Image (tube, rainbow, N blue to C red; front, side, top):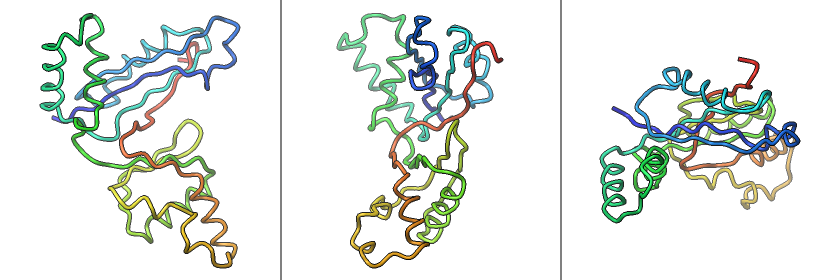
Length: 198
């Protein structure tokens, strides 16, 4: 059974329009073996606890978590007295499972802050470099890719191979690669919802 960390959050970035109404950033994280579609009721409950018009996002960890290692780390934390409030245990479990040493798989997330054309250029480039793309995601505003591990240096446009005269295709690739943020262990966007629009 694979475990992943789920994070529901409501961020300032999405909710500037609610500053005058007492808006406060919120988040809720937990470890689960359930699939995202099985968690939609729980996500909608989180959304409904917000202000009217508040936007919340649903993320799930790209990499699985090693349940046995996380359990061992939790046991150590309990024995050391690092957990004093059991009402917050769910968040502590997610925090422990999120540690690098508790990672069960090793996939990369490429956050592509680009338009559809640039996203196509990025995918074509990665394909030519033999990067295995496992999943492509349309996020709230842009795109993301989940890949097998690869040398992230191939995304470095400051590399010396770029110093030769640039033609139009190379310029487009350069621009597209500059819009990628490479994450080794991050969260995949699942969906978002607005209170009052459900």
